Image (cartoon, rainbow, N blue to C red; front, side, top):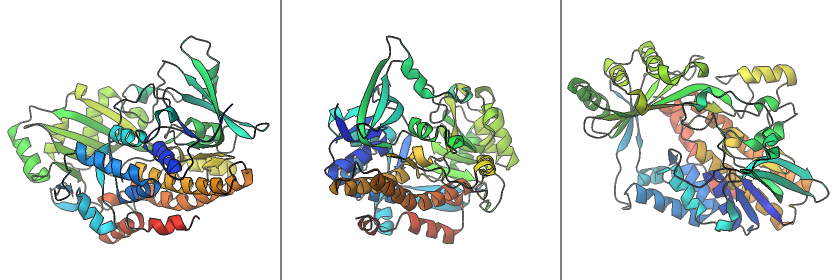
Length: 487
């Protein structure tokens, strides 16, 4: 049977960016597998920031150009001279805490690269269209990865079926939030003897898992190890409530929302003007408010809440309780009260922490692990299998770094795999292990820092000194120097 150099599990933006990076480096004997039944419009908007765009450009310049073109086309900003409005962060009195430019050129001037906003599906499509169709297979759900010592390769077992498996971690799905987490081995599904299931397998020298926060490969490599507690993502403590439309709003509330908070901007984040970063307490609620059609508003509210309390019939009451706890103005609370349940969804946010440490905001899982096994970090690799993106270090989207950190992972892993291929070392287990350790040693410190910023609210702080430090460390660093250091 044909043996691929690399099989990538997951055809999201990070997996496809990895595939484009490998092909750019002459490694074309690859295959991308994804469990989706067909590529369709799913997912939310994605902000690709300077570090993500820099990584993508080094991965594959054509992919970078296509993504930029796609983003500017769908947002009607083809003209490089067109200036986009700012996204303001305001306190409960409507005073500016800080502003975030949405303009590509302004970010480019400050950090050597711009920023774009694009839908997850459009980003996926732009990257997928650069890969030969036969190398990207939908409806191939990976259920196991097995090392075949006689063939010195990995066997990836897949099933293709028409059933839909619930994912309680990654979707805006009210029903999925109440689905118990199953601890049973997912590979048991491969034994189903129904006409709807077709079993398939593929072989490869290496497997790169970019299969998201609910990663099947992560479960497989931690199974029956001291790290099994980290097989599933940990609840972050935060959830999002979104309302797609609030209409029939009294004129006085409309006026206050427009004049006090939006102030002619199409989008604003409203939060308590308190520095919570050094506190053990939860972050206060944050509401992202958007002006919809005339007289209508859209909002997303991030709140700290126990996962088992958030139900479809209690979303409004629980949100109001949180807003009252932090003294949000009546106009905001009334906006939530006017929301129709049928226009609302919720999503709980999960995390794969890069650091097992009591210093992080939610150390419960770490405590359980360290008491039994000591301070062992859950690895991102096992043998010739490696995790990247959300499969390794998924986190809430508060700092908009999920896909950006995934692109950085993709850049480092493709450079290291290309080095292995050029020296004919893809079959050398020791060389592969050393490369994966190097990848992890490079990426883990950055992820630890980004997760800390994400979970402690630096993005909403007035502390300009720390913000400047973060911006320089994440957005302005020298990727050319980083890449050259890998060769």
